[in-house]
Length: 132
Ligand code: ZN
Image (cartoon, rainbow, N blue to C red; front, side, top):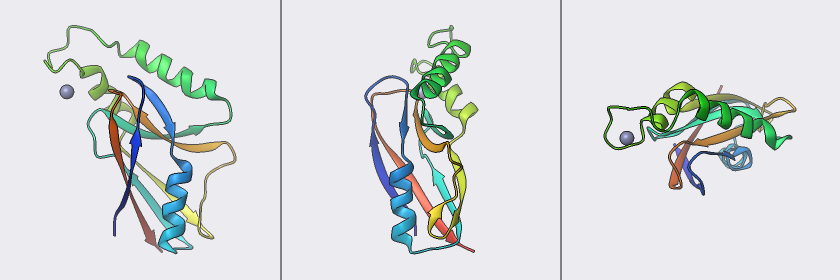
């Protein structure tokens, strides 16, 4: 069974720490050992895993992504959000995280981030936990 939750973003590009929401779904699944699959069903958003202790890490990631893929660059897509589509493809829309003893087996400094590239919007994150 697939579970999902909503993420409300407040700015054009933003990283939102969703680790606790995903962990809650792992706990609700009752699965102690397996794999947690996180999927973002959007074409202008993504999901990544990185450090959450220093908020500058997320800021730097967005800053450099915005530099490499400018918001305006004579793109052909007439919706005006090509940069968001490209960032979504680069970052990716899914992550698999191992589950051990009922918890996400993340490293000490790792957190799961929803990546908004065309906000602000209300978004969905889908989670499936599979038993091994
Ligand atoms: Zn578009």
